[in-house]
Amino acid sequence: MPIIVNLDVMLARRKMKSKDLAETIGITTANLSILKSGKAKAIRFSTLEAICMALDCQPSDLLEYQE
Amino acid sequence: MKMKMFGPKSLSVYLFYISRIASIAIGLFLMFILFSFITDNFELVDNRFEINIPFTETYIKGFYEVKIITTIALTLTFYVLFFYFLSIIFKTFKAETLFTIAAIRQLNNFALYNLIGSPFAFILIHIFIMKHPNLRDIPTYLLHLLLGVFILFIVTVFKKGYKVQSENDLTI
Image 1 (cartoon, each protein chain N blue to C red):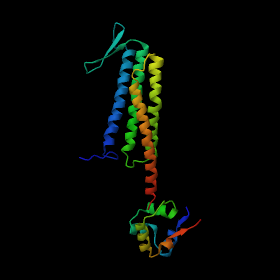
Image 2 (image 1 turned 120 degrees about the vertical axis):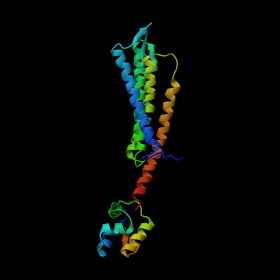
Image 3 (image 1 turned 180 degrees about the vertical axis):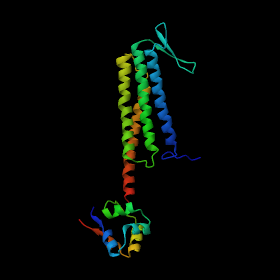
Image 4 (image 1 turned 30 degrees about the vertical axis):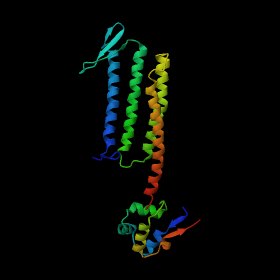
């Protein structure tokens, strides 16, 4: 998929575990894993907002387009 | 009172049990008839057999000919399988998730059974076995064909539903 989700990078920068992020934003670790692995078909704005708030970052820090 | 159609604790649960019981009951009835013939548990009057159905005051009657007995057996077998396939569909309908590959596959099988099995049974019974000169009982078989076509439409709907559900499941 051309859209890359750089969640692992941001989690490492903020020294946060996936499990903690999932709990903070209210999604399951399985769904977070789907997001990290690039298997997700879409992301809701509400989820993106919650991740940005939890990781104190911008959407552009998380999402990258590669041809 | 609003009743759920799909999922656990829905109408599909009851219909699963009803259709499964119907399949088993017809199967047992078929076994009983065949067993009666094998064990000579019938009366023969004017070349017509009479099998007493226990606990009821009714009989199964017919001409004592191989083609009649074969027709009865084939017709009952057709409906044993019909209700069995139907029960499998209701089993998939009572699952937590409605749009699954299994549901699509079972619906497709049921459609094919009606579309292929029904004309096959009609041709076999009415043309080859009974050698009927007219198209008697064809409305029943036409209804099965119509059911088969309708189920194919349902299959298409379910395929679309599965696609939308998968995309929704992968929307985080």
